[in-house]
Length: 597
Ligand SMILES: Nc1ncnc2c1ncn2[C@@H]1O[C@H](COP(=O)(O)OP(=O)(O)OP(=O)(O)O)[C@@H](O)[C@H]1O
Image: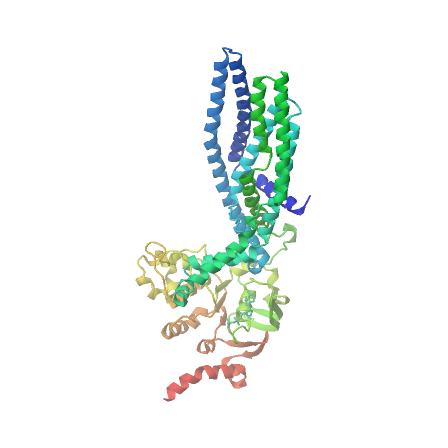
């Protein structure tokens, strides 16, 4: 069996296995209707044969047979919309469950490395059917139609066997052969489409840029609307181009010829049988209908096309859903993280690189508990990378990080993160009410106005609040009724308030990565007026290019070439006359000039 065939069987089997978990009731009801439909179809064929026979014999029973025929016909008509409604409902639930599985797997890993892994990114997109254009739910409706058709075909074959036992065998054989050939071609097409994900990712990115508001200003001001549209269209056509072909002409011609020959032979046989008087009119009516019905055992164009395409998403969703699951026996006993650090955090001989570049190499750094450390260095020196390692979003390649002498790796990551309050350099602006934007700092915290008052005062949010129509409940997005947007500096206060809420609820390490980059001079001065208040008793790590801020820290380290090259207080480093002193002097020079003028 080819690997494509195996993969497709796996995909369809994965759909079958998942359905009872999605909804046992709906799955059972749909299965019942599918079987019932096949039985009714066989009954209809037999009843119509009987009607013709009774008519030919001018029998009085014809009325009963006609009534039975009509009942079967009406029943099938009535069942059809019920079957469709059940199928659609199950399909919606199936898509929702698959999306949930994908989200669970995406969110579960403690780090974020998987999100930049192209293989995982492709899988996440494939799990949503991006390469085929069919949502996975379509696999459910098409599977129901496929099973229903196959049972109908089987019923027709059995019905034909009642006329002549061997007649369905050659007909069914050619239809099944044809189906296998066409399906093999179809699977090749689908397999090729998953290889186009890198191209489709470009299409998806262009689409998201065009419909989102993140790039809306730059798209318009730089005028690249047409470029964006063209990029989407090209990538989309390139990525989905393989879906256009549907098998080789040779396969189609040979298989159709075989079907034609088998049917001509069957019809000739029936004609001779009638002429010989071996078969009556009733048998001929039944046989002709059944022969047509047997074609349902063959290749069912759009149904199989959709099932094959839509079901490919399922194994990908299942694989993504397993991300980050550790076998229970591998989970070691973890020391409690509460109250850490009491002595300090140490980075010992740390080396770390992203797949395409080495960033840290033999880095040693001491951060005594309850003190503040500023990290400085040129762009790309690795400052934010240290923040990510401390937050365990990435693991070091070499060396170790200890907290009060305990390997950070040994601590429960969730418990450790409850000790952290972080303002990331690229913090997020959530399109949610201000209360949630701040409340995300500690989900289980009291979010009443009174409870949020202190963090509002320290972060400077109290100056923004009076301008918000619904106060804490104002959605911070114009896309929502009554919503508004904030300025860059105001958003930065929101991010700071979020971290401060975590501090209020027990976090002991405050990490601020460029916390004042968007603030005006007065706002920055206000924040730093409170800096000591803000950081009292905490272990604070500050990443900043603003030396007026940096000098406030107890200790400063200068990062260069992947390691710490200078470490000490502002005065000590100024006295050293090294890189820090040079950078500090460079930044303060224009102010000194102005002062002299
Ligand atoms: N997710 C990533 N994948 C690959 N490379 C990355 C990733 N994040 C950062 N880098 C690279 O690692 C290096 C260090 O980045 P980092 O963000 O730690 O620098 P930084 O000192 O904080 O810089 P800046 O002052 O500009 O904020 C840079 O060369 C950057 O391009």
